[in-house]
Length: 244
Length: 161
Image (cartoon, one colour):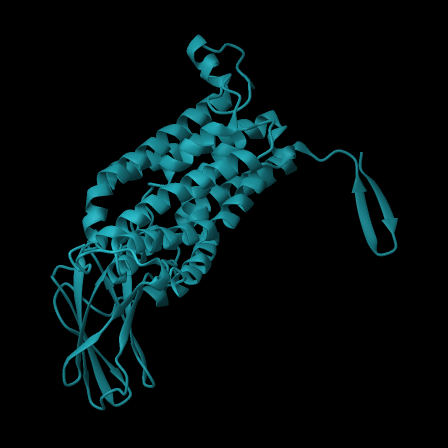
């Protein structure tokens, strides 16, 4: 921040917000989306899809991705204005660790709820209760029959530690450092991260669509096998988070 | 009971799909989605992960034609998520343009992470960069020193998370 000219004045006419880096990170997001993101966020996306048993996947996943991109853009703005990746990254490391553990717990809960072996009901989806008995508290939660809950989930999971996200944040800090004033730094930092986030969306939507196939969801046995896998992945996330 | 309807060269199956077939397909799908990405970073061709530089100990050198390219990363030991100084020295014919470094992982795409190098003396260059942490736990990174019009040299090394 100390590198900005003093006094800081916003000169919108001379500011160039169109940076080739946006296109670079849009394509980067697209490329890593089909490799890295499917591995990292795939389990979450599959969990979210399976949890919404009788509903269309589009709106919940749109909200999930919007939440994720909002978090990315905020982080990008912070990186841009500080111009220091390592400074911000060290501050948010604990938060990311927590997000990873929380994501794992969330997947475990959704897996348990989906299986019906434990009377948790469904937390974010329809009122499908395979186990029959649903406790009063969780019934209330399950009756929140809205996909809106997927937006805050996206906000939270946007904090998950991820190599390509770090690289994009590094670029956001870089453009911020070169920007003429703080406003430009924030906008450009956010721009890089929004482009990166948008690039990752097609891959995650594809995963959501695959997991949303009706023939998968309508078979009780394989639905429960999916629940077991979800619980296993949840534990994997929790262990990874603790070790991170 | 399956019934086969043949129309020209095309065959269409009608009737019920066996449950085990669906379950098998489902397991493959979920397995790929859920575990594939988690495991795939660890499945790398051996040739890609041949570590040729101990960056924690000091300078690493490689030949590129008639020149010798050396790389030194500091501070040591080389840790991820901290500012690092990359020093490159080229012995032999001086390049016409400044070299730069591409950082990445042999195991997976991490996005463009370049270190711009500035000349600090005859045939020596320096720049700062960050090696980010990969939550997969993989620690092997590469620094691809790209010398315009001459070629590139890849230094593969482990970092500390």
